[in-house]
Length: 108
Length: 120
Image (cartoon, rainbow over all chains, first blue to last red; front, side, top):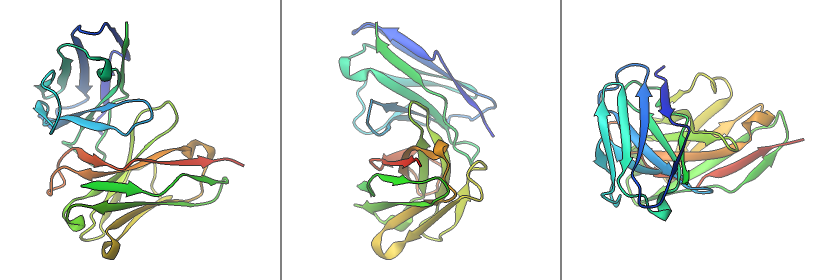
């Protein structure tokens, strides 16, 4: 089973600042990596798939990069609605399609 | 395109729970359905998937022996049944639809989640 490790656990950022979240896979997953956003009390929302492709309706301030074992999600200028939890997920070697433990983006 | 799940449920330890996930807006048999759970304050845990076309399933090792995923193509609905419930099964259970018909994609569409509480 591929283990996904996200860092940091919590990221404190001021509105308008740039945020970079990291995700590491225990073995190569090529580019089969997705990012999800989850706000309190809500369902996860697909943001990025295939490591760098934005899902439909996702603002351009969200960008994904990486391949193999190292990935990142960048939010170029944080808006108030961007605060919440972010999860990465690999779908290269499955089952299972493992998730990272999440990074909480909070107001600094 | 949406997935609509059944409502919250409260069960006693040792009982079983069956959560439904009704699909609309697309051809139900074209995309795998996955089940993901999230315990209070915890992350996302993949439980397994079902191929609505064939009924084929695959379960996470942790869930093996207690989880059964089925579907009814006549009403475009997938089901997840968890038996021998324990207190640590208390969680929100989500169904999610594959992004790609091949099954090799991310989870594009999510149900609203079903809170299952296990308590004596």
